[in-house]
Amino acid sequence: MSEVPVWVAALVGGLSILGAAFTLLGCIGLARFNSFYARVHAPTLGTSLGSIAILLASAIYFTVSAQRPAVHEVLILVFISITTPVTLMLLARAALYRDRAESSGDVPLQWGEDIVVERADAPSQG
Amino acid sequence: MSAAILHWCLLASQLLIGLAMIAATYRMIRGPRAQDRILALDAFYVAAMLMLVLFGIRIGSNIYFEVALLIGALSFVGTVALAKFLMRGEVIE
Image 1 (cartoon, each protein chain N blue to C red):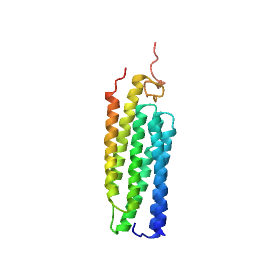
Image 2 (cartoon, rainbow over the protein chains, first blue to last red; image 1 turned 30 degrees about the horizontal axis):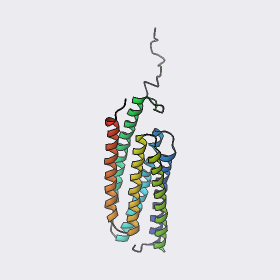
Image 3 (spheres, rainbow over the protein chains, first blue to last red; image 1 turned 45 degrees about the vertical axis):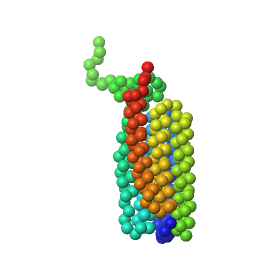
Image 4 (cartoon, each protein chain N blue to C red; image 1 turned 60 degrees about the vertical axis):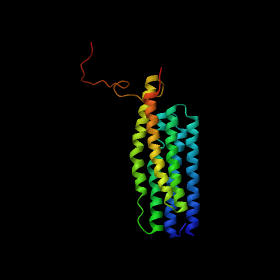
């Protein structure tokens, strides 16, 4: 481990602890929420802010210790932030399809079928 | 001085990530249905990737970065494949 200035070490350490704490919060939420549709939100805390903080710490550390700009961490960040919404949307759709097919309990309500709003100026039936 | 700061901060954050991986493993074992387990596997992949980035900072080499990128790609492919399997391959009576 090459020697870096103290403020860089403090910055890198603080950012890495921040990112790790956010990832831990997301995984605790994953373990503790009640239904799948609540759980699917929690780990994105780790994929967004946790990844940003830890990869920023890595970029700062390698920029200072190698004395040239190291921006290849941006590659991971771009990849993660593009793929995470895609995978979670596919997974939530698959879960919704299974729950609807089995008509199990905790399916979120669907606008237009489960929630019907009567318009005031609609022609009255019958 | 700065080496000591880096050492302890990286150790603490690696412990936090390890706890996160334990929480994801708990959901993976406990999860009532298949989609919960797949979601926990995805979170586990992300935590492992961040753990490898922290290892890279600790060792001071760029090699771990490549491994982290590879794990990120594998996580995407694996989760999409499993979600597709849930959508189509499952026989629901």
